[in-house]
Amino acid sequence: MKLTMDKIVNLCKTRGFVFPGSDVYGGFANTWDFGPIGVELKNNIKRAWWKRFVQEADNSFGVDAAILMNPRVWDASGHTASFSDPKMDCKNCKTRHRADNIIENYKGCDVVPDKMTNAEMEKYIEEHDIKCPNCGKRDWTPIRTFNLMFETSRGTVDGNKDVVYLRPETAQGEYVNFLNVQRTARAKVPFGIAQIGKSFRNEITPGNFLFRTVEFEQMEHQLFCKAENAFAHYDEYKKLAWDFVVELGLKPEHLRYHDHDKLAHYAKAACDIQYLFPIGWQELNGIHHRSDWDLSRHEEFSGKSMQYLDPITNERYTPNVVEYSIGADRLTLALMCEAYDEEVLDGGDTRVVMHLNPAIAPYKVAVLPLQKNMSEKAHEVLKKLNKYFMCTYDEAGSIGKRYRRQDEIGTPFCVTIDFDTLEDNTVTIRDRDSMEQIRLPIDKLVEYISDKVMF
Ligand code: GAP
Image (cartoon, rainbow, N blue to C red; front, top):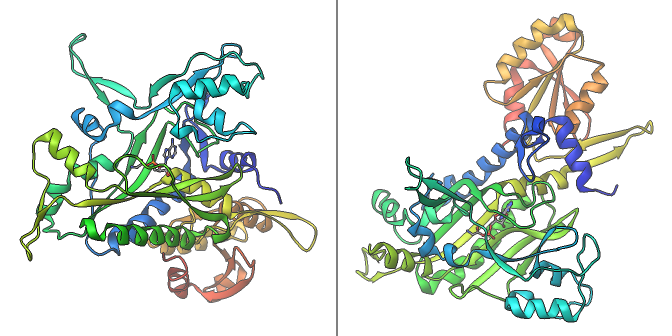
């Protein structure tokens, strides 16, 4: 089976994972709404991340910071000055492109555009006659730098409004709460601050479904540590980040580390984990050794000391930061791509099945009465199970069709109520992957399912 993005998009739309944003108005480019199945999947992924990086981690604390922050935050972080991409427009077909991407995708590319100035990129494009990938003409505007932050304004009187930004990353909400968390949690370095929340970027070339959107969720964890231990923590987080996505369901052969050659001036090391999406190898997450840059800059711009006093050695210092950042929507997409399968069955039929890790499956159990006159008993079973698990109920159509519907949305267990159930309080429970069925007393269902859906 060749997996394409179209197959995933189509399944998502038809089965209620993800719909185009503002659909009844014809959509709104690069925005997506999670439907009833998708919201369960994404919430389960976020819960798994929180469990691993907050609940089970030593010395790790969560926050949920405001999206709108004091604009000085973005001066301190460097986003107002340099969170930008080099954009060019094709005058012929009126499409917009990133100059660095145009050069990177050029067949004979022998340069690293990240290291070039705008003037150097313009010269390279001209000398190598690089044409618009959309219309094939070379009729470019000069390169302009385009800040990716969305601006809005605050204030009630027109003409007296202050510019504020929708945050382009959640990380700053963790840095500005360093002192608050350290004090109230009585946290000792090394400790972590984690956050899951929306970020916004006015991307020049969004696309590929959930891969790059203008509004997305990030799951970010900042570890505050001593400078001399930061490289060891960086290596540790590279491994933790890898193990997490493998445990969730991504195959190691579809993952690779990509160490950055070009580092931001403050960074000591940076690495992505890339995943083999249907569009090729692409960044899934990032791990960065950011030195003491973030806290030092907030100290400089806020005037508030960000130093940590070690209670044992009495040493005073500004901690370094090791950051681990992953997009919840991008990870959801990767996990859907990995789980999607079209299996040819013995009779020649094909079933579409999502082999999702049961821990993140939208519904854990589907309750299916064999016949409509068994619905009372089936609802009794549903009531027992939905106290513990997200369940669904379906009594429409043949049992075979109902199993297929559940396979397509990745439900790991189907519980069928049949004639024997009415006699002896037992049910069949069907496994999504093996399609095997066993018979169990209703009273044993919660115990049987519980440990199979734990993360
Ligand atoms: N605080 C560091 C930071 O934001 P980043 O590499 O720009 O680093 C981290 O973003 C992660 O956020 C990416 O690896 C990706 O998973 C996700 N991400 C970034 N931009 C995105 C976008 N436009 N759409 C969807 N996910 C995005």
